[in-house]
Amino acid sequence: MGSLSHFDDQGASRMVDVGEKPVSVRTARASAEVQLAPTTLQLIRDRKVAKGDVLEVARLAGIMGAKQTSSLIPLCHPLPLDAVSLDFEFPDDHTIRITAQASVTARTGVEMEALTAASVAALTVYDMCKSADRGMTIGAIRLEEKTGGRSGDFRREA
Image (cartoon, rainbow, N blue to C red):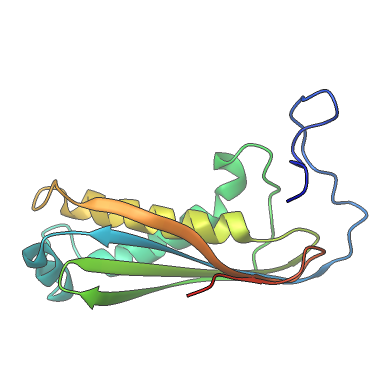
């Protein structure tokens, strides 16, 4: 593993200079999981949560979160995102798996945008369902895959 690029030789924080890097297509896919009671998951799937369609609001929140990543994460470059999408899966009767995909044509990658999208979507699920289930747990937030850039491609092993 290389050195941490957000610190200079004296240990001071710095924004990485990407000005000399070539513009290229870059993608990232990240995921998060929300563990919740089976009855809460059924309310979500049946679209019976009082605040509205949880998954569609979470999808919109994730997209909006990705667009705000540089405002939330210090030293993160603002990016002109080409696309952000979110999908939801139900691997069992008490889990929502959120997958966020982001792409950009730029000098730096979109890993943080994909991670932010997945995280914000999970937080939105919690917010919309907390009156029914305060015991929900958000976890397993992780980068699944990234393409492009000087460091090459990455794919998480199964």
